Image (cartoon, rainbow, N blue to C red; front, side, top):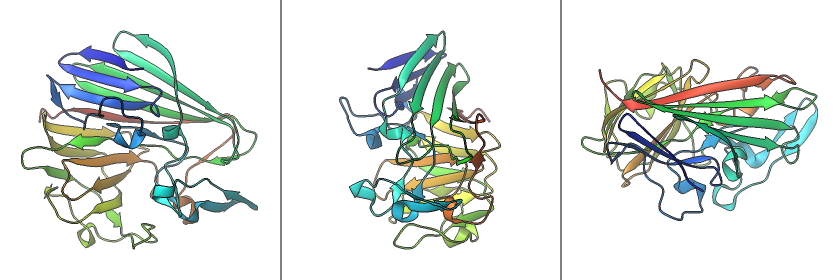
Length: 283
């Protein structure tokens, strides 16, 4: 099922059954996000999808939480780690469509992730771009680790330049699990603009991000911004491909094994919300 919004030159398509993902975002017919192939059943092919109740990898798909061990399911392609939570692998429910907005919901009972939680996505399209608000509510009786994020894949064009400011990057080894931050130049420093035409994979999280990034897309120069509680930006640039993923997230990969305070914690009955905005850059 595809839900569509058209407003102010922008066109948005969302498929609740495909992980609650965006399947297209265009400006005057030109792609901002990499379009999802027709009939695709793999959410990794989606233009963007939500990360909930955690973002990125959890090493070895296990962690200890206040004295209890938690074992998570593993997708073969990403073994031995758990990846991106379960929201992206679930069918969401379309709650309402009113004017330029869509609302999707997901209720997830306790299971391998041993807490009951619910999530919502609100999409608002206007003449100034797309805004997505992603929220997570702890419906359980105890505190739970709780991370959120977005995974937008931008359709690159032109100089393929990406520009943003961040304080640190989290280098990774062959296992793709970071353990300490470093200066951005140790991987790639995008402060003054960096081409995405490189021949090596970038799959790294940047922390201390200032909340704004600029990307050269098929539709033109695009800016992605995020709310103040999503100050990590995960960058995935596969070599030789025509897209790059720049995802605002609340925490770095494997934060649950990091220092106290790295992984957000949500009290019973409480809700955490982050927002992402994507629009043509008018500056």
